[in-house]
Image (cartoon, rainbow, N blue to C red):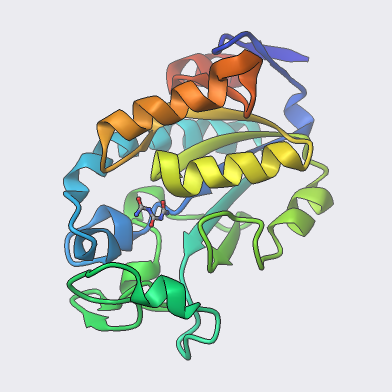
Length: 221
Ligand code: TIU
């Protein structure tokens, strides 16, 4: 067993049953002209997570441990897009509309793909998901079971939306979940801080939190 210093207490894990989950590092959230910006957000806020996420990804690859990437996106025919999601609020472009990076949040379009800095390599799994959580209506749970994983380390965007939702879903399914704090960002810094507090409060009611440096130190051994 290995031990990472974390909040609210040490995260003890077996490397051979531990995977990295990279949530929605997509151009649609990270770059101008995508879904995040259509919602009125300053997407530059998310870029702080890139360098720490690269370090975490490199450590997992070096250790030969599994990496799973997710992408929030919908089928081109919108058959997996609930009206409630498409019609919510007053974005400048809605999901499925044509934007500068192709149709907003649609599978196969440039905007829905993962940013080049964190692009998957051969052997890594990519899960397309229609919801905020990665388990809903996807093969994510089956992939984790096939890989024999019990502990998950999370990076991604945004902390309080897709990352926290997926951590909660994973926690309910019996996984020990650790958030790599600086490898995750939000359009709302106060929400990121609150999400970390919510995850780790009450004795780790959802999971653990630790900066990338403390995780990499242990993975690099
Ligand atoms: N809007 C926002 O903060 N997030 C999302 O819509 N999706 C993800 O977090 N990936």
